[in-house]
Image (cartoon, rainbow, N blue to C red):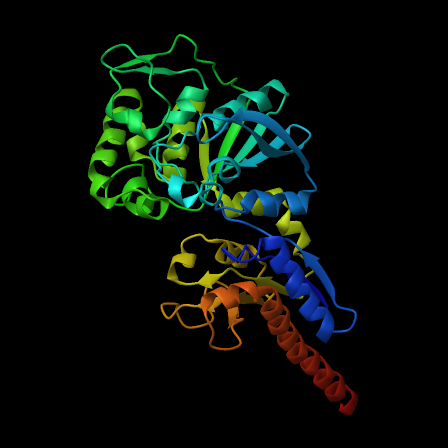
Length: 380
């Protein structure tokens, strides 16, 4: 039996690779001679690049860029030939910012643009950017700054490249701007379709979890809208521009980037369609499967790309009450790994054990079915 194991990460618990490895151990306990192919995936959220690099065998490198507080830091990226991937969360991810410093309009993101320029200098032609999990909400101002744009207040003083400066910009200089070559393709791996501004935009949707005071949502949203109304009004109509606190908007407006489906691009990069052709079973999963998962999240993306006739099972941390009846979206069965009632913190710590046990239980059923089929064929 050949099983494709293609889960997303379990947020705040395990990266996708470790999820896949735990599931594999469970199946190997239950099914003799099982063949498990691990294809960890991501849909553009935090951990996507980590999942892809595991499947592609990319080489990790680092470069010095401006950090979230203006200091110089080393930022990782992953390269193979003329292709490179990186994740903005490795520079300005929420987990990188101490709780006492979480102010999304003070975080600087210009290091992301600096990394892109470095990649171009290295001859990279295809750049993939994961924009999930950021602690910033600067509307993409830092991207512009990293590419050479300069911003000045009413007194002619140059402003720091952060969201707070959006309230004070009176002049924009393009004298030092570096143009992205036309043969360089920058693609943003997105797992959300939120616009940049408005009630469903970056600030109102994600600002609170990043530490922004809700009383400031309206003024920050208006400041971002006014800025793009002057420099790139078309971005205000772009689905997904709100990803990464507006980093997606900045990349599109100032670096000519394109927003693409995170999970579909991930599956293309790891050559999923070819690897799944002779599979007997496909396993998908994420920390919590709910109705929002149906809007292009990793498990659904994998299930839809699986050929008809190959069953897809979901192994998840938990299953929400708002899921439609099974089967749905090519998933024939879904399992929660929670074994007992306990605090969430404990479940997160034990996720690998619970994953392995759940996979082993499923494997026992599959093995039993195989034995029964063998007995039945003998009786005939």
